[in-house]
Amino acid sequence: LFKLHSGGLVPGVEVDKNRFKEVYKSKYGKVRIYRVLSVSKESKEWVKSNRRCDAEGSWYCPGQYPPGLQKVLKDKKDFKQLEDFNAKSEADDDYQRKYFEHLNDPEKAAAARRAQKKGTAATKMTLSQNEIKQINLKWENNDITSTLFGLVRDNDVDSFKSIVQSTPHYVHMRSKDGRGPMWWAHEHGRKEIVSLLKSAGVSEKLRDKDGITPLELNEDEF
Image 1: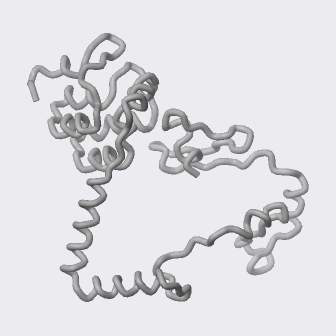
Image 2 (image 1 turned 30 degrees about the vertical axis):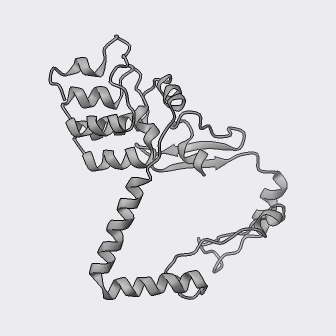
Image 3 (image 1 turned 60 degrees about the vertical axis):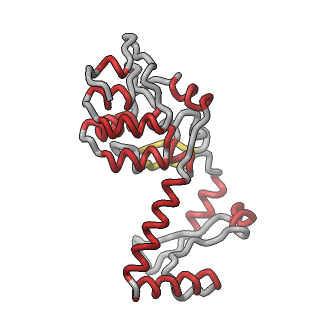
């Protein structure tokens, strides 16, 4: 799933073209649809002859998995909503207890959220210098660089901070002209974003295709 989501967008992540063909991608890559390739004729015929619909002629026909997948499926663990009170377990009981505690005590719930948010910020991901170097070697325009440019242009500090914390490798990516978030932040005078980029290890001394550094785009000193 990670490869299908990030293939071609994150450096080094590629989708197996012998297995999947992308047939649709939304503007910012949030929605991607693939056609599964190399499906055997036997499997296709089995699925076709084993369709199960909720009523004759109905559009709702979830179908079944072919026998060849049974070995894998027997070890699967079904996804379920935490609020599914029909599926009981010790973990569910603990969740429900906390759920109702927070429902009856909003202040306690707010304190728990603040503590969780603080903990998430304290454990943000970091990259090695070698990883940063490898990302900087690849220059291309893509959905990620377009999104980052838009966030800098609009001075959307909160969204940019979220990206720094959750996917720090994004802020090191550079567009086809060799520029990236640090150039755009200096060009637009986004001091808070410059500080976030520095905290993520983004350099102000790198040069674009014309030999220009981010610091040369703004006369003000931050």
